[in-house]
Image (cartoon, rainbow, N blue to C red):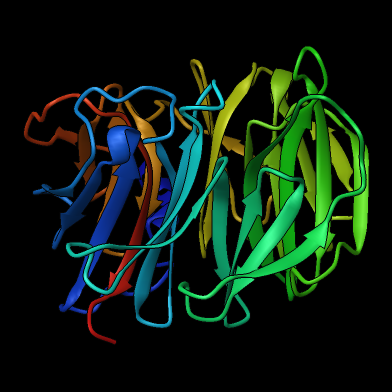
Length: 314
């Protein structure tokens, strides 16, 4: 039963064609590329053992034959920066846009890339290279961060935190990124956001799960004995919510089943061929069945934030 549930989770987001590559981004501006999700090559980076600074690449998306990576940060006016990088193969990268502050996260949907900017606004692009200003969130708070995003049902949903203790969460909804259609500030802490089975799903503390079809109205439930969830992943046949000691699966985001053992790493990607994860500071993991995990070859330290798959040259 456990094995079948794990295999269910490994059904494809998209069946990888042979000419495709996996691309990972992380600290120090690190970009990794892999043909099989097992052997990884550092295709580019700005610094080894990078910190939470302007070199941190936080999010990556694929669409229209190109990978687009975003990130940045920094804690002083002199060191702050934001980046949008574009590549057609995961190896050669160009900087499409440099900003004074962090740009993140990014998602591709409805034939456009959409990213969060530091001025509480969205940026959008049809090709990843030319960017236009989008909807701006009209909300005053001295600390306001974009953290997560997802696309589904013709809708972009962005979430983040704000306030002095950073434990208050907000949600912004947009149909096309050109305007903000709905904004709320009354969400609990969100540890993961994903879209699948026709629903946006979030997880949080004390087994909290929220589901919504449109990002506006959220239905809440609590999973008994789950503890604090730390991450959420989706494949077309199911969600996987992982906590400190336990993991739960759900085909629809509403009925959840506990697994006997949680993954040994933070999940970054799952398709019909392989599941990819990571542990700090940049150790890559892989599994072909969702049960047995293998560490990849060791690399110099730089934590990995996201992985995406794309067809090279398409």
